[in-house]
Image 1 (cartoon, helix red, strand yellow):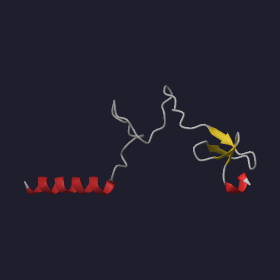
Image 2 (cartoon, rainbow, N blue to C red):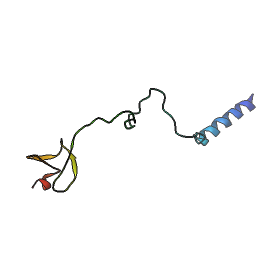
Image 3 (cartoon, rainbow, N blue to C red):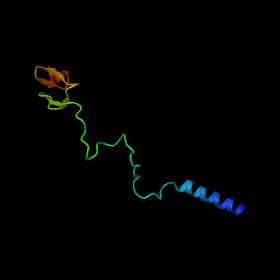
Image 4 (tube, helix red, strand yellow):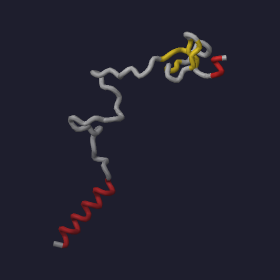
Length: 82
């Protein structure tokens, strides 16, 4: 009986030190599991959050929510607005 307990303890220690190096390939999510970090799937389009406007001074694109507006033009910051 002691011999079986000894073998079991050796097996547990072996598994602990070996880790998960025996895994082959990436882990696939379960069916119906939604990964919040994954981007939109190929079947699903990403929703349009905000329209991007080009700054006429420096040429960078900025969302209209944070861009500074003067007339019909959108600028990225105060320096470009002047």
